[in-house]
Image 1: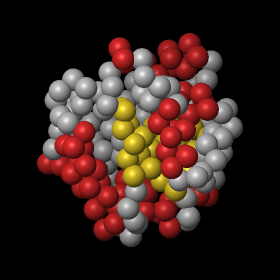
Image 2: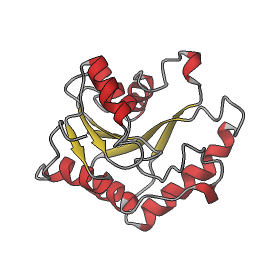
Image 3: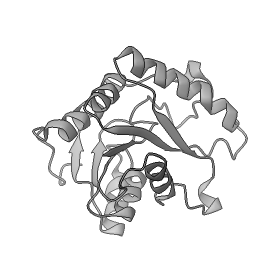
Image 4: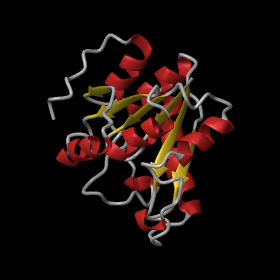
Length: 194
């Protein structure tokens, strides 16, 4: 089974919506590397799906992303996990591509690469676009909104209402999301608590 993870605000710190341009700008959230490793050890395929419009805007190149990704992989391997892939959308919203979340192109593509069933997976993210990208594939995909990054942003509620789609679970962070996926016994917050 596949687990898609958003990057900024879900796995790594994101200060004031700034781009992570170098490995020195990347700081994993507490427990993020261990959570990915735990999911991997349970036999799940974990990959990162992330919008990186800063590439199209010229702040960085696609080649600049690899050392940043490699730093995340190193942290996960040090936590007992293994290599994983990142799938990036380099486009801006205005480009109307199929890969930028909330569209589900990245999720479909990554599931195909790993020969995983895209209709039965988990999505972990901190923003409405992560949740809706998963639900655009299938309402059967379990979507978890973490309350790190933009997870507590009131804008999420507006977009969920607009689309009529909500996360299946709202949890504190990536660690709680991993526990929910593996054990199903984490007490999530009701949807009314934003």
